[in-house]
Image (cartoon, rainbow, N blue to C red; front, top):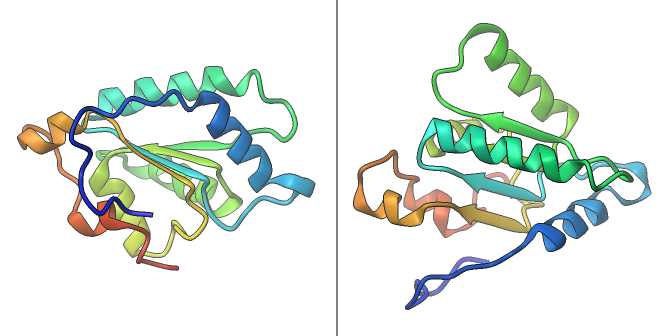
Length: 147
């Protein structure tokens, strides 16, 4: 559900437990949902890689069902590009990436957004300053594509 207005002050949330619970419920019964439970956008490639590694560490504490994640960042070519698309096709619970790469895959129908329960715009101040790659208003306003 999109915000009708941006929060007046900084919003801080600790969602590790909530995210793990949402992912577990999305694959209940051993069947993975059609799309991810969470999309985490980072303003830069290095931050996306760092968050991806943190999610990887979180996965160690969630055994059944296992959490599947994918890293979607710009500049991937060849094998890495094909591997990420293959992972998406097989089904993932958490997507960590940069805005243009994620948005491109949504527009191409490779990411289905109707199952997204968590949308994290990390380092939002950097996006707003315009110093980094900025997600489109369409992407932020909600899952209107492929729903």
